[in-house]
Image (cartoon, rainbow, N blue to C red; front, side, top):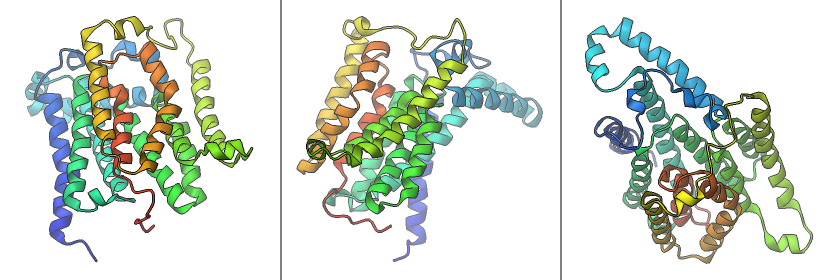
Length: 336
């Protein structure tokens, strides 16, 4: 049955316009005490002489977008110069435009994922939109620590989740090949690309097969690992600078002593606990346990070199919990 015009309009308002307005308010409605990017005229130097230097795609986009916004303000809309200057810099406005673009893409891909093979709870579009809105709020709330790479990386990760599900449902090789390419490209965005390997492994790896010395699932995972490792190590050979390090620092002591970091960790644990309580099927619980197991290297790195207060680091895992909570593994309702 074709979608009515009203349903299309409602979908457009809910999936695109409402998320954009929420994102707009998070960037311009209040200021974070955590970062001072709003006062940076150009992309800050630390993007090119720290661990951020390996995130070459976001850095390239940041430079080009800042140039574009500067040109646009100076030559195309000089009458808006005073207004825009009061509310940010060319770099900050460019950061907002890029991040909001990929944020809307995240909203669109989430909408696709939630309709792939939904559980009975979200077959009703009203309930699905509540879950979708909750996902959007989790993304927006992390923007108290905006970066030029996280939203792009999140879109890449969610796209990988979508491709993994499509491959799982259809067994068409093209989705697997697209996933391999996506992981290779998104490694130039952020190390979050490794979580796509964890998600794929959680869905396809079978411990019983390993006991029987069957390695079909392992062989399927290996190309994904190579697609991540080769660009990851290659970047660290190409980007050679005495000021560039593999990590910014080791923060494990600060993570377990700072009240801010402890609050961030507590928030993530409580959120994941309540989402986990939605799981009614054993297969969903089994999947999320496998996913957390394969995500341990990522979680360990957050503990060692990340800050728990930056909840954005846990965002892909939180969204994965939500996706799996409302996914139907037993009865395939999606028709490709």
